[in-house]
Length: 266
Image (cartoon, rainbow, N blue to C red; front, side, top):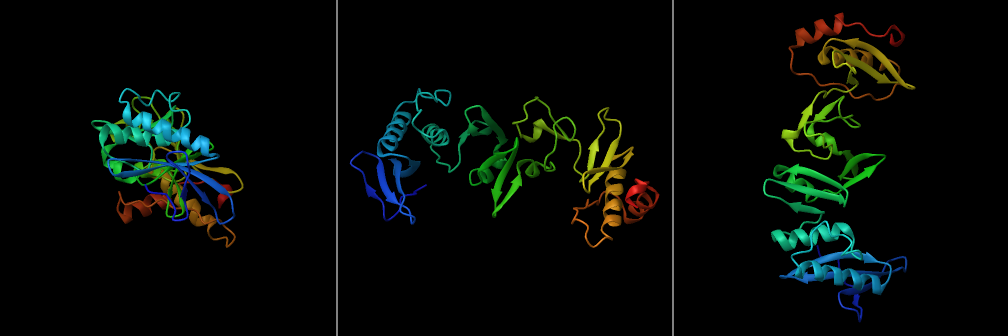
């Protein structure tokens, strides 16, 4: 986590480095070294604020009684940096993302009041992938793209709790596999409110209902059939299709040919 640049020079204030961007903007970077590990604390608008962040970092590293609930104590330090430092102090591991290790799981602190819970099997991934949010949905930056957080766990983008999945302990931030029940994994398929049947729909100028079906499989194949019909138009959108391997090709074809879809799509 060494973010110091070769053009940085030390400020008279401890733990602060001053650097200039290619555009000529002055930045004040704070960092701390502990047990041979150099930990960046980020950039701050002034030398004083960077030094105060450094002092907060020292307090955290030297005072075991400071916990993640004491965010008012380290108010000058960016919260995610405080998480990294507290985990380093308590667990001896320095991650690049705001992770705190527990005995059988770990927490990812997006903020003091937005805390994810994950299985240890996901530690390697989230230690190197930052979670961000937009419009109430969570994403992970991966290879230059924003990928829905839930997709890692078998959820479709913009899945709705209670309709497409169930969080068994009612905590929608707890993504441990034992806590997550997937109700629907197909594109264009949603469970009806009474949970007795499945609706297939497709987005044209708005959402168009393809039909209602007894099983998710039938709804998924009906969606694929609608995609095939709409794709005959060269100006059609590039719709994703459902990859279905749980039935034979013969059974798939029988359902495909027999399933009824909205006449307006034909």
